Image (cartoon, rainbow, N blue to C red; front, side):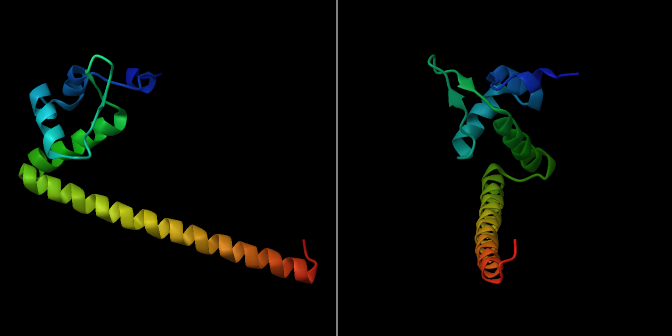
Amino acid sequence: MERESDKKLYFSISEVAEKTGLPPHTIRYWEQVFPALRPLRDRGGRRRYREEDIRLIQRIKELVHGERYSLKGAAQRMAEIDRGEERKLRNIYQLRSVISEIETHANNIAAILNIK
């Protein structure tokens, strides 16, 4: 059975408030505090949130309400997490480059040995 959120790409602030259990004014304020939280806006200037925005709001809520971080502390923690993710991605790209290089060398060796 398909859920409504499986069909929708964008959600209004009231829908996000309902999904997260946060009032709209809190979500709007968090947009000022957390640079990663930047919903799209339609022609009328209304916010349009994606699933990734909702997941970010839920993570912030967990830090602030669940783990008792201050907003400043939660913002710092989110920045640490982002830096860690960035390092992981950089490592993945480096590994892919090394793998590609190894494949090239293996193909060259196979060509020299006339192996297919």
